[in-house]
Amino acid sequence: MTTVITRLFASKAPALALAERMRTMGFPRDEVIVVTAATKEPAETMSKAGVKDKTASAYMKQLEGDAAVFIVRASYKPLTATTIARDLLAAEDTVDMGKVDEENFVKDAPAQSAPKILKDHPLFFTSRKSVDSKRNGLVTPGWGLKLISKRKPPENAVMKGGKFMSQGIWPMPLVSDKPRKKSVMTDHRFMSESFWPTPLLSDKPRHKSVIPGGDKPLSRMLNWPTISR
Image 1 (cartoon, helix red, strand yellow):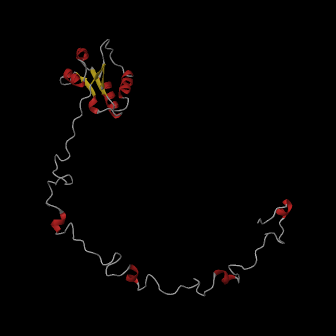
Image 2: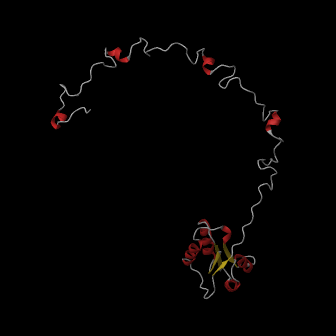
Image 3: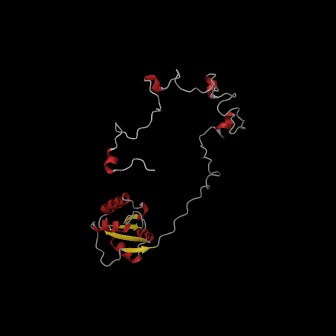
């Protein structure tokens, strides 16, 4: 439902200013109407906007000189459009119409169906040709270029000619078949042996305690065995 809200202004200047303000706030431009004595067929304009016949007749009696009828059709744009329109009009200096009903409800008209996508274009992805264009047709046929060529099986997925990228730059095999060395060091020594003669693993017997002398003060104080059977 659309709420038709109307007010009578003694001068058209504030009515036009309020109409422009409401349009900048999000009200549809066609839903905010200002009717003056200079408007062509003002009574019919108010009727098409949804104003009741009795209300329109009362406005027509006052519509003379610089007076203007302000009409806003409040729907859902912007949100709470009816409340916003009422508050804005309440702050304006409008003519008191007495018992004239200045608000009424009308049913929303069905939305006009949008034109079909292919109404002007036979093909969806075909652009409209320019009238001033001297070239007719596509660019590729004009230059003798093929859009699609037959697929040829490649000799190698990396490079043509059956060579890998490494072989195209220098003749180096990707994988070596030489026996693996025991150490990556050139002198066949481990890193630890390069700095000090320390073996990586020790074959000495493991101590039962990390305390020098092998004492176990906690287990000895509590009389706990260090190893259980």
